[in-house]
Amino acid sequence: MRFSPFYSEPKKQSVMEIISDTDKNISFKIGDTFVHGLYTYKIEITDILAYPRTPEYNTIFSTASIFIKAFFPKNDEGEFVEIGVFDVRIEKIIDNQWRLIERLEG
Image 1: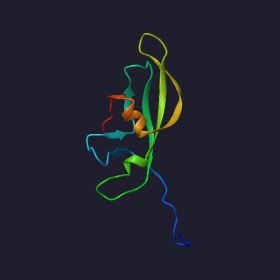
Image 2: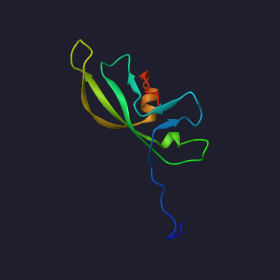
Image 3: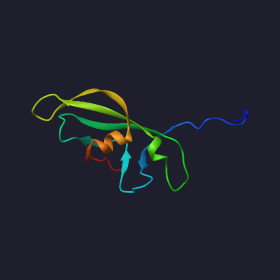
Image 4: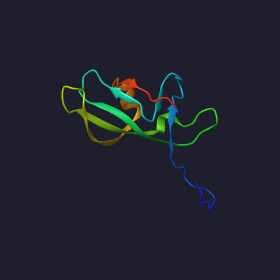
């Protein structure tokens, strides 16, 4: 591609929610909390970065980056300690069978 002073690479933007390009029942929203049947910790989505798209979709689902906070159980009373913030691919949440336990409405 020839150099053009008017061309710039698209940049990912922070968005509140992304919806799958193929299955409209799959979406991720900031604040969603997930658990997994095999692990004792939980994860919460803290930020979503994605490329802008057409008005009918907010983003390009497959190229989005999801940032999560991971929490490990502190005690048997249901309290958790934050482990850290991590960048994960959407496929890892879907393929590893994380289940949504809480979605903040709003």
